[in-house]
Image (cartoon, rainbow, N blue to C red; front, top):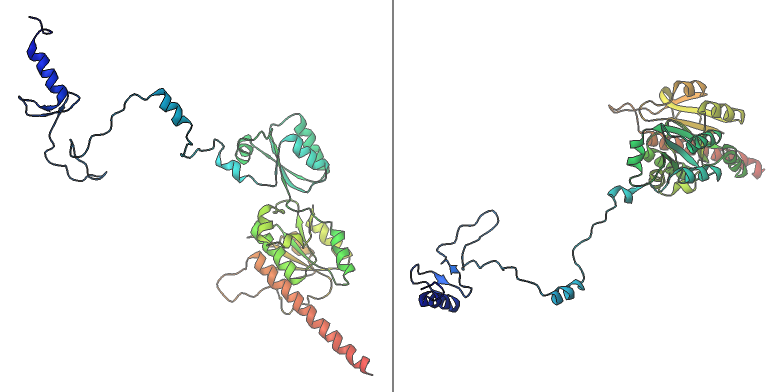
Length: 351
């Protein structure tokens, strides 16, 4: 007799299909014909939480064949999971005043846009040389860097070996600043920043200039911060009201201001107490950069040196703080002088 014709085998299969207990092992037989072990005791909680084996903990759902019609219906449902962009995070943080590419930089120079600095790849050829020549004619600083520097600055962008930092606001002309003071009938008051590199300091200086009534700020074109977006934010809007001039040589600018009748007062150590110094009349205050202060060349050209006395253990103030103190001292002395002039004219008017 073959196994197919054995009635005992068929009887066992029918019993497994109906479910029940296996007579030999006393194990529960499910409707699928497989043995179901009885759960004895649940295991204690582990790192992932409590769990138990067998029917008491619940069997994991088994994967079954999916009907093609139902799968097509589910494909129309909206997908709730978050879709991540393939663009790198740096793309969303690009400097809004950054000009990328050879043609855009070339057109910005032709249009006369205020540019603080041009970054150019060291081994750039072709039109890059023409851009360098145009930048030199426009007196724009060029910094030659490796390709990796431009790649990090312009992630995923075709920079073509050239990028430029445009100013957040157009620079003013020094003669125009002096003319505006003359038009207002006031003695000009300027702030010359010698090598200031922190954009937050420059923004704070512009804010103090606006509050104290200064007519403008002068910065050098090299080794100094320009009118960046950070400066605009730190100025709290003062960048729109205080004109900033950029000069190639601060020493020559001082000579020009002296010819126009301005006195030059450099703020540095070992000078006269600022409250005793005469700060009235046409004046230009020179504030040094972080750490180094006023350079020796500029200090030698100053008419006199003023200092802020320090009573604590720190021997100097922040550049923007020093500028604020001196600017309001100038304002105080000018107001006092105006009152004295009014007092002297009052008796003559009474007579």
